[in-house]
Image 1 (cartoon, rainbow, N blue to C red):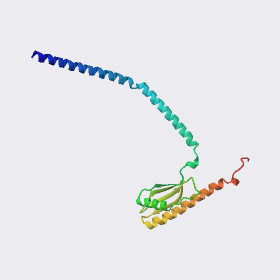
Image 2 (image 1 turned 135 degrees about the vertical axis):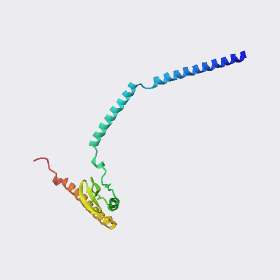
Image 3 (image 1 turned 90 degrees about the vertical axis):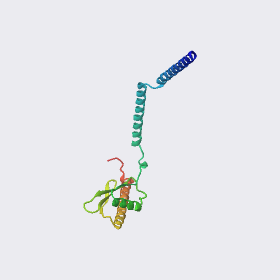
Length: 180
């Protein structure tokens, strides 16, 4: 009986020693880990550096945007601001029939739909914020097709006229010498 008691005591002492050793080892690990983590001051310094680099990059981007080549802009967008099935059908018909003028550039076509009093919807086609077509449409497909054909031809004519006007303004005989 006395031998069992001594054996149990040795096992308990061994287990307690093992637990103390593991606790000491864990404590060393925590101290090492906490020393390798950045302090709050280091974190703030890094965030400040990142912020300064971001501000510098934004300033450089703004400078390059101002000196950007206008030929790199996206031309000839057709933007839909339709709300109902009538408007979406008109936009689809317009888009199917649209052939961009080959020499035109610097324009966008915006198709807007506005509520109309009574039965129907008001469709407005703008080219660079100039209204070129406006009509109240009923939900009849043949009327939508005819209106889309008319809107396409008016829009193409407007874009061509604008391009011709711009070319005339920059012809050699229209440019002055700068001497009054």
